[in-house]
Length: 311
Image (cartoon, rainbow, N blue to C red; front, side, top):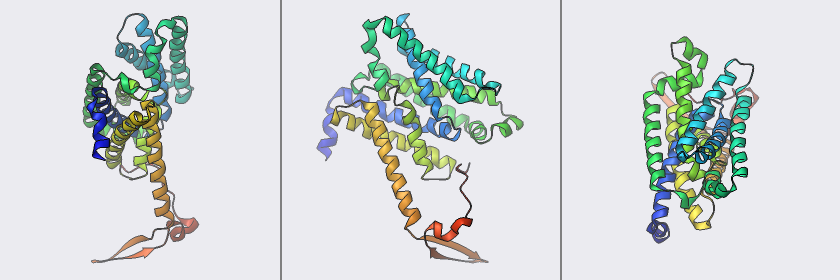
């Protein structure tokens, strides 16, 4: 077993890719919590397409891949906020309009300048061979910056995530918080493009957070679990990519989806078949006794879960 795990580490490209996928997985897991709880699952998909268009535009005018993708991704995030600001246009419609237009621009340029079409295959589908020392540096800087920002802005992000209107009433500048969140989300997407690919980024952001949500009702624990799950997805997915000689983005997402299904199955079994212990307190005396499955405990009168974790 150890030989099986250590054999790929003899190759420098795999060591680089493994480190990159570990950081990208943790990064996407962390950001994904806020995306899922804000009901913004589509934003990761949209901004990744906009960033791809920016990378193509940047390439044609001689800019660095990350500069072009970053500029267009951030511009797309700002435009989405502005288009949806008045309330007449829903945010999902704004995302569809802005990001697909930027993506279409990139595709149009590629169709005209066919000589560099292959250069963007890694950005579209992820590529285990495409991780360079520059990629590692960018991913490390983005991961560190994002973690520090989330730590420093923990309360404003938490408050605006659960109740944006109340956060505004209590003096939180929700516009600045939203802009900062859009910025770190854009950075995370750009850092992830060469690892998981444009077509898979949305799933990489959502799967760890959704899986973590099924494991806990606590917001702080959800962040920790999602970050760990994302990191595990990245590492195991990269090994699967090496073993099956498949695109890294696809194997990372497929493993994540399998993990999600496993947690769903375990929860279903616990919910339906395993006895639950109910604790009672009578004065200073605490005692417990088992109950049957939850649907038998509460019948049709039980209260439904709100679907939101506790802050």
